[in-house]
Amino acid sequence: MSLDTQIQTLIENAPRDGSTPQAIEAIAPVLKALAEQLRHREYYILQTPDGNWLTTTLSNRANPDLEKSVVYGFPSLEDARASRPQTTERELIAAPLPVTHLLFQMLAFDRVDSLIFFEIPGNRETGTEVKREDLQRAVRLQLQSYLQQKKSNIPPNLA
Image (cartoon, rainbow, N blue to C red; front, side, top):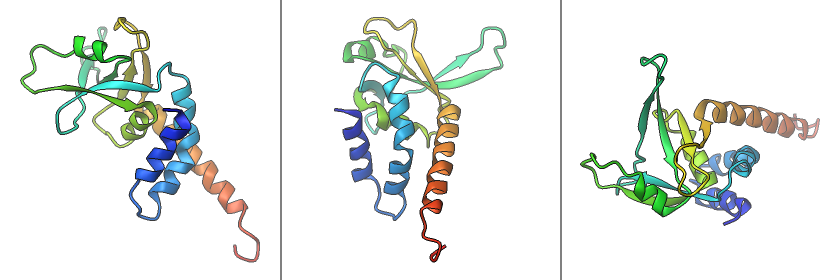
C-alpha cells in the first residue's frame, strides 16, 4: 500500500469528531517524510490478541539506570516469529501494520519511547530508531506551521 493510500486510510478511519481527520491531514507530511526514510511500507509488530504491542525495556550499558521502552518493527513475518520471546506466558501474534499507522499510533503511546525498525530480513542486529520525542517535536512544528498558514489564508474581513 502506498504511503499516500496509508495516509488516506488513516484520515478515513479517524473519529468524525470535527478535528481528528484535519489533524491527520495536517501532520501527514511528517508521517510521510519519516516513512520515506524506511525501506518497507509495512512492518510486523508482535502484539497480544487484543492489540497491545509487545514492548521491550532496554538498559544503557554504561548507565544501567537509564532505560527506555521500545517496540520492534520487523520486515517479515519470519523475522517477527523468530524474535518472539520464549519466556512469555502471553500469546503473541505478529501483525502487519502500515508504517504510517505505526508512526501515528506511537504519538499516543506514552509508555513507548521508540520504534526500532529492522530493515533487512534476517538481520536483527541493526535497526532504524524513531524516537517518540522526535516524532512529537516534528508533529508539533508541522501543526504550528499548518495553523499559521491557515491563519494567513483567512480573508482580512473575517479575521
